[in-house]
Length: 240
Figure 1 (cartoon, rainbow, N blue to C red):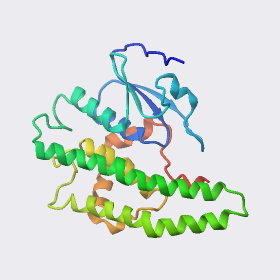
Figure 2: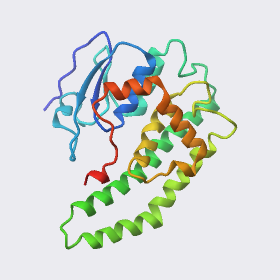
Figure 3: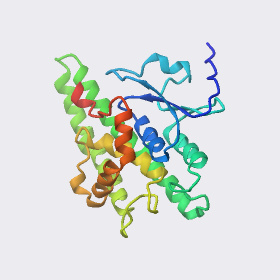
């Protein structure tokens, strides 16, 4: 079945799923203070609602429908588009970014999406399988979850968080290296939240990351994004 092409509009439309990385895209839109449309969807305990496939065949969120009608997916790509298109005062991105700074930004984005996200996703998967399994196999699966977590996943998560701590050395307040958050900050906020909410990451062990996280939480743009969204509870294991 062919996915319908969204109609063109004069402002971007964020297809927003509750309790997801879409919250970071919503945060960026609020920081940019531009007109936009928000199309919210609730999130159950299972997969994303099938209606998300009406605008993109993968049926994932976030999705951003641009004024030309193009549908963008993947948080980092959506943020790249938003900042380069609408940040005309260059508050959240540097159009003259050096190769070194651009490489560092991309590294931090990948560290969040590919590394931290995958390790936390694996922990969620093992926790979910164990919680939803029949009672007679649950003890065995809990043992597998605990063993893989302590031997493989937890050390990896701690190593990644250690890198993020080091990247803030020198007194910088943001991973952007500038006076305001940038693409790496918007991306990393979600993945750090994904670890903090279920207790997989304890921020008190990482003083610089904790201070950065608190700065994110204190921003008016973040607060407005929480008000406009339809929920941001990432403690999925606590719901199973």
